[in-house]
Length: 207
Length: 207
DNA sequence: TGACTTGGTGAACATAGTTAACTATGCTGT
DNA sequence: ACAGCATAGTTAACTATGTTCACCAAGTCA
Image 1: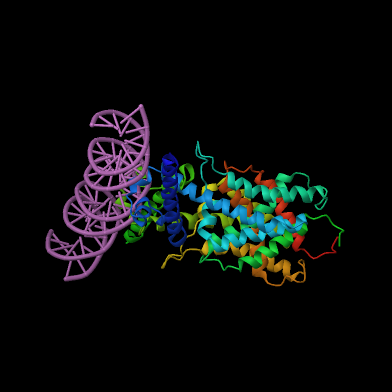
Image 2 (image 1 turned 120 degrees about the vertical axis):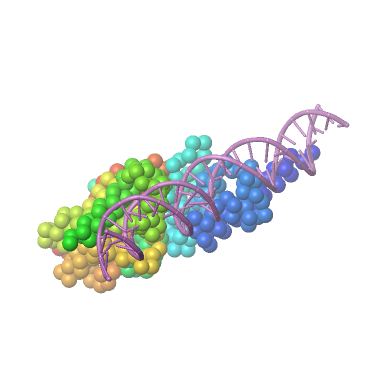
């Protein structure tokens, strides 16, 4: 009997409905709008029903994050993967980060700017690690190819430096839109930062 | 009669007590711990009493932010002010930012990583603008002294680029402490980023 | 058929921010 | 001196939140 598989399918379907509702609320109205009751309303359930599918609100949010993180990581991999030059791969990845932040500020905030206390028992962070590793691999390749200054040997530090520079552009944009400090166009800033930091890290002479 | 001044002093004193209590809760237990009732408990008031001094919770938090922002800006100015070389001033400012973030992560989060919707009627953001201007002035000086690449002419973009790079290091540290991605020591990363981006922006040849 | 499991409901609880009504106290103008 | 008033506080309540618990209906299985 395929009855058990059908049950599983149904369960997965309502789980997905919950996640979609949460995501939509989240994207259109921001973090605070994502209440259990409003999610439930949107799919004509009760708030309590959600607890049949997620242990608590945080886990639900985590699931949204994890899913979208994976989407992002896949898109990033696709956009970057076929570029041969590691430095150029890094630049592409950096611009992709900022693009993502500009397009989905709420997501970016939740993905990268919210401390999620590494809940026990959640296999979370896998997609995040993936995204990180894409950049890290490119850095390692560039390092191996001798494209960076000879005093730079720790791929962790270099990866972090690059990630931080790009993240800064995105985070500033997300946090400061409509703020008290004038904002420059994030994509231009991203380009300037990427070029500058890559140039600053690069081995001299090539040109 | 000095009676009105005394009243004002008293009012300012309890206002300060409220702010101190809020700040302490905020620093030691994080954002979520700062509830009106807990603040009030700590100074042996009722939650409702706080509304005699602040229109709502957000305004109270804003006041904490504004005060600490000013402290930070002053410290920054002091640390940077007597350095003659503009590039060196920029570097000092960058490292100070990261120091601040490492020392007061909750503050840094609230100051720089939380969208505060520019509430109508709040004269907020003045201290933030100050901190921004310190960096901006240094950039303008460096620009005027011809220390940057000739294609870099917009001080807004350059300031943002530098600010973003440094902010990235701090923000990454604050958001990712205990996260799923290994973290490099933020001060080393800050140094690498500062040096790299300054070098990348700098006019070639000098050396 | 009768027990069990699953996925849902409805009511309730604790804790938030916030507000309204009230009170005490001390200042002020006559 | 006193009537009025502004100030700073309290108490109790309202609403919204996350979450839990007792219950229920329907499908599954022995």
